[in-house]
Image (cartoon, rainbow, N blue to C red; front, side, top):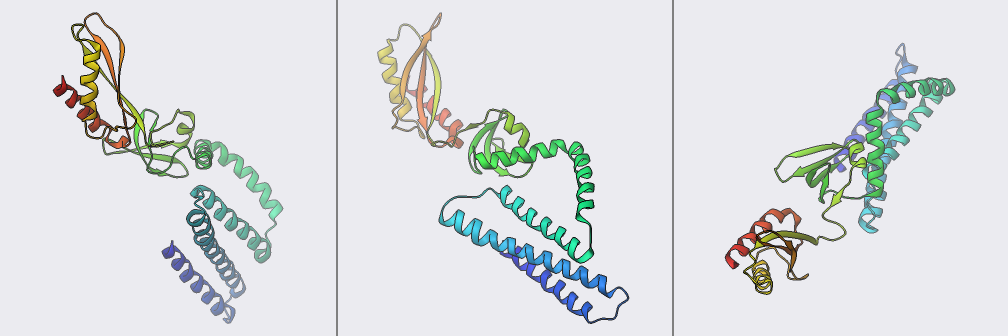
Length: 269
């Protein structure tokens, strides 16, 4: 952010210097170039103000002090609106552009662009809704559209998920808005896991449950609070089906913990 501020300051100084030079020159189109330099200087000034607002208001006051993170999409829309409003005022004041005629033209152009870019606009609107509702954040483990992984990035158009296979899956925001989203990081990190084990009828359930419970407690990554449970799921033709129910608080390691549970169960049996 600081780097962007410095770059804006440099360009602001250059544009203002160009205005001073052009104002005292005798060029043929000196007045036109001077107005252009004024417009550029004003736009860079507004851009500098928006970046200062980002640092002081959005990040300093809301995010750091009050712990209310403002979605980046809303900040970008605010900055874009300020720049567009400033540009329209400059066109009207410096170049005598009729804004009413421009409004009619822009309305027709907006309709054409809206039809051509309806998919992209749908993704942007869906992205805005996701940013406002915040069903997940960067770093959360989620399952969306059959893809499971950690949220790596959220932007205007897409959601990027870093999967267990170590690749990025990019999902359009409009698809995310239409799908069921499972968040494994909220409301808490606690996640219930179930492993089914089949045991013969010759083994009494009370003995099997004691052995399985002792085994699963010894598995690395399994929480002792809540306490693991062994529940009978049903009776098959040749075996009794047991559900080994346990809790974890690190979903990123779910597969390794699953392996550890089965490993301890085998040794226990």
